[in-house]
Image (cartoon, rainbow, N blue to C red):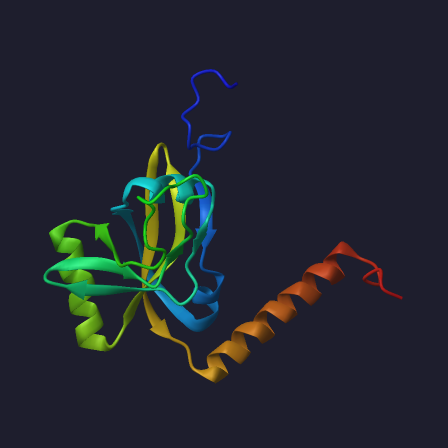
Length: 166
């Protein structure tokens, strides 16, 4: 057992990522990211700590001056009983009022959306990184793939060699 190490932190003290939304970077232009707390019920915390979280097809919705994470799937805790949680219930995000108003205003004004990028442990707290994003068009996605492929080829050429295939 490690001496005086927080339960949720990684070995080097940085936040430990539990789930990430890789699809978000493919489908959206990420404009700005914000860290938010998330309000969880009983067994959800233990399920999240074991990494039973999926952010695919989830988004942030604004209702009554509050932000909610909708569509995120947290699997029921394996040792939970009848008190277990619903896997896809909306979960309230803990943000300052100014942050909520700013994000909500941007989504109304310019047609942006707010998507979760990752769920991680920061100390003993479960945090969600959410981002203001604009949807990519098909040609933007192709351009991004092309750029990645060129960077990959350039890196391989710098390493020297035939790529090791033939």
